[in-house]
Image (cartoon, helix red, strand yellow):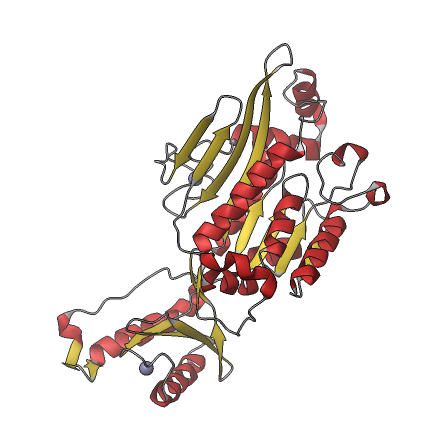
Length: 396
Ligand SMILES: [Zn+2]
Ligand SMILES: [Zn+2]
């Protein structure tokens, strides 16, 4: 479950009764106003965050903080506000946060994008991960703390699962309703004839667990055999509680469903895909691999045309069938033959996606779109893209 900071209240000079290096006292009027806002927030599903700084070196909550926050939490409870989040940051240190619930405070994770601060538990130093230490301790932290939803564990998803597990990530939710078919065996890692007919989420779960055991971690994997678009509410809820949602399916409708869930829940969204483009004679003219993100208020793959809502509504037809679906099929809008797909190109997309996660975790920046056409040796990279749609159905 992620909480996003939605609204910040700033004090004006008139709101202080007293200010010094040792502390501040606000006016009664201001205190009443802020208490009222904190209370009313409960009805809108918002939670008040009490935020303050400490001098350098005093990283933890003080006994004074404990006492006052407990009183504040008690008062808020009496006003119908059951939760309180409190965050402290010492000068020059990383922030720490805790959630007050039913009279107790428990440490919670603070992250900015995929950069994780303040562990809720210590993670061990593993010999198997020695060679990735250059990505900083934040990779180790993120790997042990972040929950990753992989929607679609086919040719790209399964490679991503394996790479993340070997990078030390341990908390996974896998969603896919497909089973392993003979035509998948050219690109699904480590699968054999014995896996035919097996649910892909089960195969991916085994893959993750094997990788996890190999490096000395203990992976927790939820394998959910559903189509994300038609999945029951509980499944979407489990996905929405993840920190990262990776849309790795082969249709636009399910990717847009993932984007919708991610933007709603404050989860990080990333998708990856490949395209083997053919000319009319069926000859290969383009070999594309792409990774795209989504940043609330900054970059939206739907607004910028990386996701196609027209194709999505066509995808939606298959669930209802009928005349439009039949016509779309006969007109060739729905391909009878599955797209060509090879492990080599999938590996490039999967590797670029996992590398983007590692970059973000290590604080090396955020890239909204990375696209490569191997055939033409073209590389397109954007850090920020202007939106060209006014009325988006997901980013609002
Ligand atoms: Zn304090
Ligand atoms: Zn949008």
